Length: 618
Image 1: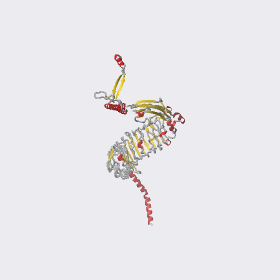
Image 2: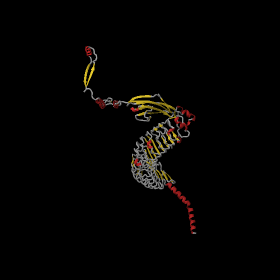
Image 3: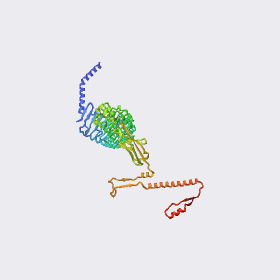
Image 4: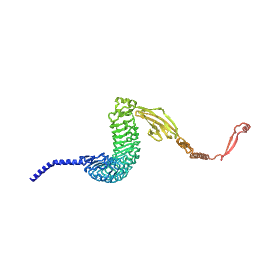
């Protein structure tokens, strides 16, 4: 009975006090609002205090203790001390960006054990001493970019075991200590940009075993060394952007990486780094835009079988050769816009039917039979926002692909077979050591490519280099002729419509030993530029002659040895002949009649008759 009465009384009391409890909650909320710092905006629901762009000179008073989000960006704060945030243990996000902070003292964030985001971006910090980040064990994002930091010291991030994202770019960095990133066991994303680094901090990066994304932008690095990114076993996304001094990509630079995305843009690369990419079988996205890559050769990218997107925008491309994308069965997107391509043949692709998007606008395209496959697919393939247009021939210049009528394709999109001009067999005689030129030029649509076949069955093209080369005009040049260069050469001019050929014979005359010596030491003239003068003010003009002392001595010695050898051979021959005849007469009688001559003496001699002479063999 007593228990029942107690319960009834308790229920009655609660019912009576409910209005008062509601009023108390309202008062608490009002109290929180009244505790918001002047000129700041507070939210009781999100427990945030926003003091953005309030021209504050110091940390404002009246910030609620339970604040979780504090925004003090774009003010006039000059420093951060340990006492500034010790009263807000529940703080999770702190934004101090765009102030004039010049120093952050060690222990400034010791009490903020729950904080997971800290931004010190766009301040005037020159050095972050050890101990500044002590206590931030749960921090996941740290932004110290756009400051005046010159060096990253060893172990300065060692307490940030759970940090995921680190932004360090846009500083005056000249050096990163080898152990600066030690302790960042969970770091997944790192950005280094707009600083004074002259080489990749390989040793420092090697401590980031869980790094997934690395961005290196606007750096003055000219050389990439082999294994520049070693020990980054989990790196998947690498971005190298705006390195104007970078002109080569060594083969072993990316050794040991399993990248899926690689971007090397705004560089001075002049050749496609085929060898460097052979170690990347899992690559799906490749961007080499805004470089100086003129050609994509055939059959060099076969190991990138998983590549889905390739971007070569504004790279100065002149040609994509047949079989350039051989082996790339997964290629879906190709962006080669704003280059100098005149065509893109179907034979460049391993599987052209799977190509979904082709950006080829901004190229001087020649709409001939080589582009027929693309024009036939113009309604099923995506060209992006800008439609590709024909540059030539005249009848379709400026016409977008989608405006072509099916019935007109066979009329405009044609090719003509090559025809070699002056198609007559050439016969050329040259001396050994002299240059030789065989001419071959051809007409056709598209412009034919000229290839020469040597007597030794070697193919020489425009890209060949060395002693034997082909000029852009089709002329074959042998810079220094040799005897074995003699033979029949075949010029082959070919394009998509067919080919034409021409034979040319070359005969190289061999020189003697002395002639070769003279040729090896042939007369040469050296002179300076017209502006160059000697001490007396006259132009320098020096001549060296091939008949030097060494040449004369060698030639004389060889002549003497030859003469002595002939004389010795004759004596031996006579000796053998004489021995082979056995006994012989030692005396020989010779009878002769003197020649007639004018005068009495001659008549007297004729009357005397023939004369006899006796000779004795010694």
